[in-house]
Image 1: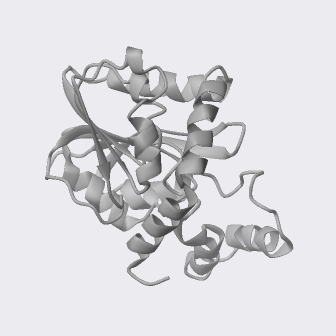
Image 2 (image 1 turned 180 degrees about the vertical axis):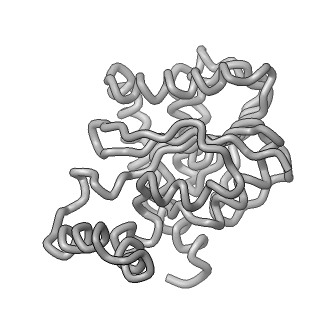
Length: 240
């Protein structure tokens, strides 16, 4: 597969989430909405929205079927970006569409690692179940989000924690975790990078390393869903 790393991730997501898969994913929204983890994610987003004085402009990075659009409050403009046209077709009829209060919703087909928005366009950028799962969480993403946010804006996201039970605990992985805790930092760093799979997993340390210089981390904790152990993060853009 050719192209930049960002393009490769986009192509992979678009191929995976074809029309048949997207229809199944949208049907799953109707099933999962009553589960505890789903409600927790929705309540979390609503609580973050309540931190702002409305109206706010919001970006959903990797919006998929628009599963969480309805949970947002006080929104003027809501933009959802996803690499899969099939998923965006489903997002045009999202879960609880009658409860979405955003004044305007725009769906964008694009690569969240390569697409560009205007500087200072959003008050809130969120991503659930995408970064450090289907696309890397890295310095490129952090820099883009920082530029797109207004002063005092918030970056809210989940990652898959490297200690998640969903990740096969092979002998090399167990050994690497043990060595990473006792070796000096310069030697341990390459081991940690391997354990984080190039950004496809991220723990509290990695998130702090990526964001500490440009964001104030307001909340960072672990959460177990039916699929993974996650890190939940709320980070506020530092004023210049």
